[in-house]
Image (cartoon, rainbow over the protein chains, first blue to last red):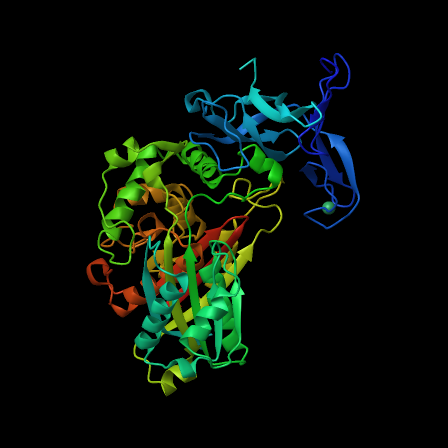
Length: 147
Length: 382
Ligand SMILES: [Zn+2]
């Protein structure tokens, strides 16, 4: 999906597959070790568990459950660029049905509205424009619309 | 293995000394430790210098040369906030290996502000791994799992400050109330400003020697290093332990680095958690003091905040925790903070802790934890 001829590019290579055509939802990239079967978020060369070097890329689930969270009430140090004015931001560990947890920004910044175990859904959001005018995209999770 | 003992300890106050050269801060701690041991600098055969944040190249060697040029080997060690405990293990190993008999271990740092580069570059661009967040998610999980409250975390800070108010080496020597902690600004939910340690300046030094050397030098009240262990992550890493890990597996049981280190330390010492009389733990913020007490096996998971409410961890309690006030009061110069714990436990065991003195402890424990799954645990005994 592109607007005004601009491309969407991921913040980090190997992190996510962005939607490529209308109706496509995209996904986060996992890699599964062919030797021991362990699964990791973001493409990597070596298995943390068995040091195997054959890892197969797979699409990770777009839904998970909130495992733990925090809301940051002060800007992190650089290279984080806080919005003007600064708005507190949520972060959390999301547990996927595949049996891994991954760390993510979350869209909700009111701790009272976040509960461990609640359904969370993946979305992609624009972080900034790069020097070529492309939209640099990041992944986030938001509380599930059903919940 | 009762072969290695602590012969002397010394500290430079932890605090803010912008005008003071870090070398001078370190030298003060070293000279105090030498005086405390009744040894001379000529007796030192090997040295280790810990620093984490200070950038001055060759500083550890410079400090040593300023105290005296005796030609001994020295290594600089950086194991993040676990540096002090990591060096104690190296010193003990050097002596048990037979390569030397007297080791000087010192740590020094000048630290201000947050670490700016704890995570991977993409994580830092998103502000994901600033240290308060990593610790706060663990605190949130602890509340959710066990029913602890923000008030319990405030109670940890209140207890720390009650002790720190009696510690001349502490940055903060003021008492706090639960209300003051809860009214201090929320930094990262559920933790407030007064729950956090503060980065600062300071130095600590410890002289470690063989039991044989301790006899030869007629060391009074030598304290045995019954165990010293350093530990990094073992797959699968503990899910929410502060680190740059982007994901981890939840299918098999994960152990925290502190649990893994403690298990090895108890085995090495031939002692169990029930034998420990006083402990200094890494209290980067109030919640982790409780988490670390549990990870050391000193009580059951989810029990620490209840025991805290009962006063068990007070100086007058059954198991005093952080009688020094911890880094919540002392502040944290990461290169020196672990040895600061060792100084406190040694003073406690010798009965030299003044107004902070606990009830005649025979076995003490020190635990440090640092960024990216690293911990060191040591057990000291009379
Ligand atoms: Zn593998």
